[in-house]
Length: 361
Image (cartoon, rainbow, N blue to C red; front, side, top):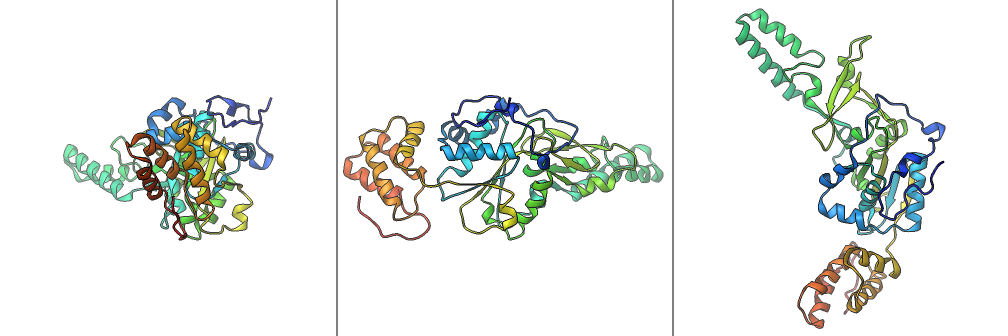
């Protein structure tokens, strides 16, 4: 039977992802050969202690749980917007941990990021160098110009050369390219701060995420008619390799894709209608107390005072939740009098973004 919600937000790992219903007919993919899902236990060694802690302590709202499940059921990307410090990037780590999706693939977007960067990287210069090295070794062994020419020709061939001169030895899939491999269960992909990209990237991403597939032209051109031409290509984040047939990658289980945005730009309507959109707001007093409790234990009287001050200041200017956590941690750890703690807390919680009038603690 289908399970709703698959993601519960309880931070208790389980295999509910296997109980997802079949995808909508327009979101069904049939890529192959099917790959085993990465070992969920590998997540502990692949994630930094900071991200692991945030995944374990993430406090999801009811709205977050509902929209994460909508994205999982519909096999659609989840566009998460909201001010800094509201847990946008932490969400994907919490979902991946609870649903045992393995290590999170992460693509940090800059103004120079292109779709090609997310799919794969190919280094033709290193391949040319490897081919020349192979030719030189053959020339030395055979002692004839004919032998050198033959080996050089083979080194520039398709793939599978033991000397490392094949295309696949100089090609590595990016985070998006790895996420779209035909895994048996979804991979988790974070496309962080997409609003920092140039104007074309959202539309470029739109086609790949809609089709769930892409091509690697270097491998397609090298394919032989009627041959399987399986290339073992290195994947993102590990030294492991995955088979790619005839240069074409098509997913099987659509990945859980989270795109984060600080709201610094508008996105094209065609992009927005193909995403499930979740807007995270600054937490209220009850939610803030839960966040503090998850990270630092039960709030004491002074921590509650800081929570109240944080909420009153948040109505004037932008603040991030981790500023409050930093202030509470230091209040508990530093041996300071009340006046010094107040001054320190004010310095740890400056307004972000727009300028606001200073207030007195």
